[in-house]
Length: 419
Image 1 (spheres, helix red, strand yellow):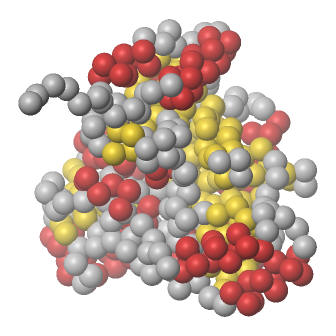
Image 2: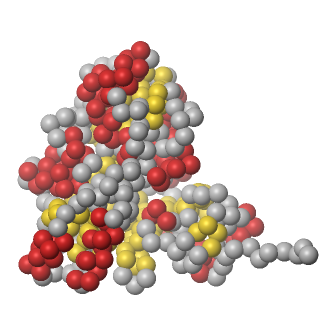
Image 3: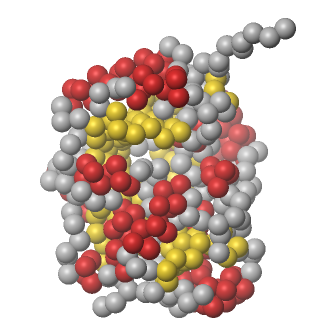
């Protein structure tokens, strides 16, 4: 079984920016496609510079351009590229995902319905554009909090945890007055039961319907302003952990329910007292992780394995892909600002870099850019990796990092001199 010659990556943003290089290391040609709905989260990367093909809404024209470049495989680099990658695969007749309900891989309500139809547990949900209907659904359920979000939200964009009727009204208005990260208007709201338990994510790669678990991590959250759960930090969990076995098996069943057959996926699962329940699944690489840091601690990473299964699909089919193993403990910490300030400069970041377990720091905006109080992943100033043989060292450095954030890390520089 041989792989393709040239791969198109739709919206090679975020972690997807590492994919063209990984493909070329596998000896594959790479074409970068810019969709017509890139995410606002990657505004700094949204220019057409560097794109080989710019999609302007004409699927036939874009498919013809890719055909002329010899493209014989298409994948999404990030969430904004999911639907276009699937449509281009179908138009080109290249290996792709099932197309019976492709919107189920973006629309979270359609996603939940497809997963439930496969006999898997999902959260009780409602989609509505009517505030009275939403109020009645909440009243009938009689359970707080309730989660409100757009049907096509990204990250934690416009995700609201409502603890009373007034918060429901406020969240409904906020969502329906906003556009999503891809420029679409939110005409409806997705309401869901709040899931209680431990939350995991499962990163996978797939080829011709066969799946491989690349890694499983557990989220740890903190309350922002006393009520809003924010992703605080996350850590990989050994693959022999009983919880990991449960969520990984469930995640692979979700991939089948959503017809994710080729490419990568990032599946978030809540392990409740009743068992695993889907939070959401993205048919693209997971999150903002730095692949080489992950490989140093786990022995592998999703981007490199995605390139590998595209180039050499037989390795997934015969079970020879490497499995992750946690070597040195690793923690990914989301930066959280509690104040209006600025992205810190090198001098202010020196104490962070001096932490004994410090590995890498990634900022999501240039030095000196405004920082607002963090309310979700999109407003986080960046992230830090901490790693050490002793987990106690990581915990101590994590606490020191949070102390630095509370005591001026994001403070604006004091103006100097001049007449």
